[in-house]
Every structure is written in C-alpha cells, then in structure tokens.
Length: 298
Image (cartoon, rainbow, N blue to C red):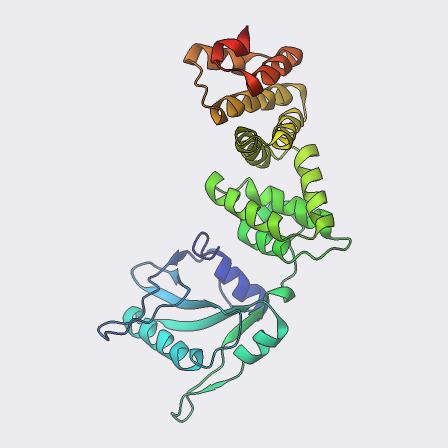
C-alpha cells in the first residue's frame, strides 16, 4: 500500500507522531536499495521521499515487521545512513507492526556504540490506528481505509468502516482495488464479511459491483452455479432503473466472455443499449448455457 500511495506515509507520521509535515508536501517513492558500492545490498521494504524530487526535504524508511528481529537492530541504522548519504536530507525510520508485543520490541532504542547516537525507531502498532468512517477521507487516502477494514474485528463501527472501505475502492485503479478487496474480504470475520457483501449488493458502489460481477463470471465459467447467482444479483442491484439495466448488460457480457463467446460490435451494442429488464433477464439466462452468441438472441 505504501508503494501504491506514498502519501499514506506522511499521513501516518502526522496522525501518530504529530510530525510537522504540510499536507501539500509532495510524496514519491525512492529506491529501496540503500547501498552504494558495498557488495551486500541493503534493501528496505519501502522508501518514501517528501518534497522536491531533485532535493527532497525528508526521507522515510518504511519497514513492516511481523516479529522482532535482532538483525534489524544492525541493518536499520545502515538503511538510514545510506539514504541520508545518497539523498543528503533528513531521514526517519517508520516500523509497522501487527501487534503490541512486536511493536514494543521494535521501539526499543538502538545503541550504535557512538556517543549520543541512539536510534529510537518510530513504531506503529497497526491495531492502534483509528479506522476511517468518513467516506470523503476514505477516497482521499484509500489505503488508510483499507488498513481500517483489515483491522476490523466487529462492533458498532463495522458498517461505517466497511462503507468507507467500499468508497475507497472507487478511488483506486481497478486492478489495485480488486487486490485490496480480495485481501480484505478473505480476512474479515464472518459477520463483517456478511455486512460487506450486503453493502455491495444494496449500495451504489459501481466499481465494487464491477469486481463482484467479474468474479461471478469466472465462477460460472468453472461450473460454479452459485457464482452466477451472485453475479446476476450484483447486476440487478445497481440502484436506479437505468443503472440496473447497465449492470445487467455488463453481467451478460461478462458471462459470455467467461464462456468464450465473442459478440460482434453490433451484438455488443444491442445488449448495452437495451433498457428492457425482462429482455435482459432472458438474455442472461440464455448466456449461461448458450453454445453460440446467436443462441443468446434466438
């Protein structure tokens, strides 16, 4: 997520550590390789630079640490020194941890041996991040909304957090949003997963509906009848009548694509321009079993 949206890093620093970083500061990725000529390559998880790309004002080494590591107490200072020497700017170390115990261990000061040179990593226990419930903020920083959804364990905030997550997906490229959706849905508790699917089917999150239709089409192509039922439900849950027709038309085309049926430009236009829901239902039913494109319309 840091590589997809570097602006997530200054937001975390501002929110969790009160860093004085202007919201207008430009964020961009730097190289994760932090050595110059040593044959051993030191590579961090992500490197984010702030300010002018030619002369950045701050570099951030980002490390994701799932468990304490004695070795990191030696390599982290090397990462920072390498970036500082290469970019000639201030550098901070941000460590993201999944639990309180790992965060506490990673936050321990690192004595380098040189008088006064003690590195105290900036550590975030991801469970301490307040989940986003504001839809507009979720669209501005979608990865932060994804983090909130990933950390969802239940409770009264489940629905607003998942609403924000769905809204965040609409601000992302389809391929990235699809990966985030798969990742979050597979890790949600059963109750939260049920709420997420309800939101997808009843709210007008068009991009999310596109994901569900796509996966349903693949499921039917593999012989999974339930996948088709969900795909059809998504197509019919677009909201308004016109949106529902458009969703149904997309379902038909995805079903046909999943079964290797290639409509001509004229046939595709016929499906997309149809606003008769009953006719679209008939075509969708036929598309599930038709051997040819012609059979869909006959």
